[in-house]
Image (cartoon, rainbow, N blue to C red; front, side, top):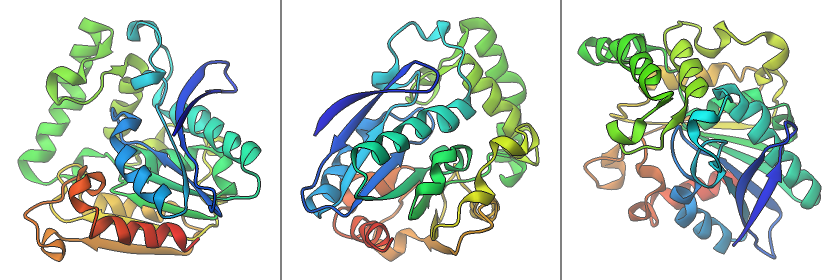
Length: 280
């Protein structure tokens, strides 16, 4: 593995880890979930690399190794993570590995951001893992109203106090830059999610024609099945395949929103993902 600094069109760097396989015909780019460091995907990336596929992971601006100044000073928003950060990484892959096909794997918000990057049209395959709309009404009953309170009251108040969203104190996830969190809140309060506030010229969902596989997980409290289906349909010009995994399929009690990339699933879930990556 090597670590590289990729300079974006806006002039700031994002930190990326590159796992090179000499026999690779494909390079996989992993777009992380919200507030998740690229290091979370390291074991999975090593597994994929050992199977003959090169991998690039990266930290969005304000996260992990791409946080190089006080987070309060950052003014980037959530859409920048796709339009600028993911775009820069895909351009890097295209420039430095021109002979390799590009596969994009988006986890949670990463699967949403793929549609905000103009470089996503280069991909030969798209894989969405628990990628969803965050609109609060996709969560039923008390859970939905609890999320509404987070978006409408708690999170805005915390941002006003700290000048960033202190996610580490609440969930153990990475803290979020203020405008990332504010835009995310705006999306999650709208039935049209991000499509309600981003103009068509910055949306590339319809331009993507590569085969797409979208995976949802039973009892995923961060990505209900209908929310996953909603965002999948936005990639309307892809030949899409939907997969829904249940814990009992893998003789386990739970998978959860983040479990897919845990090493405990190296012998059952990871080979299934690898098969999707290879068939691009």
